[in-house]
Length: 69
Image 1: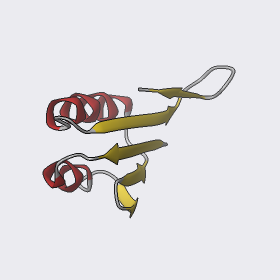
Image 2 (image 1 turned 30 degrees about the horizontal axis):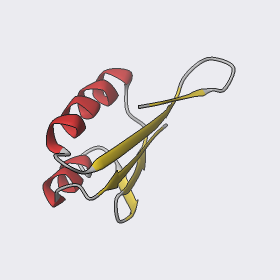
Image 3 (image 1 turned 180 degrees about the horizontal axis):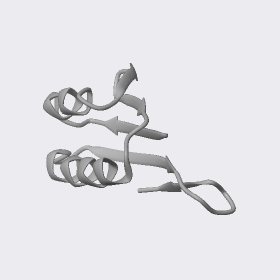
Image 4 (image 1 turned 60 degrees about the vertical axis):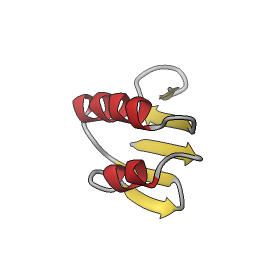
C-alpha cells in the first residue's frame, strides 16, 4: 500500500500520479503498486514537485510495518 500527500505541487504532477493511484482528496493519493513502480514514482515526484512538498508512506516489513520518504 502506498499513500502520497502533495502540498503546493504543480497540477501536472497530480495528473501523473492518477495513472497509478486513486486521488482520495485533492493532493492525497492511495494505491497498491510494486516496489519498482513506487521507486520510479518517487523519482518523478522529486523531479516534478518544484517548490512544493511531498510525503510518501508505504508498507514495508519490519517492526512498524511502514516507511516514509
